[in-house]
Length: 104
Image (tube, rainbow, N blue to C red):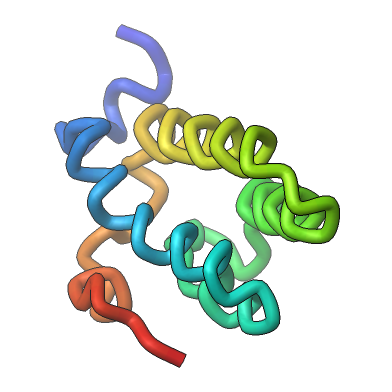
């Protein structure tokens, strides 16, 4: 058993995608408020600062600045895969994530 397997909550990639896709889509559509949407992404439950998610957010913002849908889509897939591999460290039941109709 791999180290990450013991923390896995058995959430499918599809479920993770459903929980985050609206946030990243809304950030793309409303680039002026992108930070507000992206800052709602789940953060680690075991520490105050989540370096990995901050790096993903910075990558999304870079893709927005250069208006690259391809990079943005790749970052989205990487984020889904990251969350899937490390799902035991994240709270996907967070109230912000339940309401997928987020609006700013």
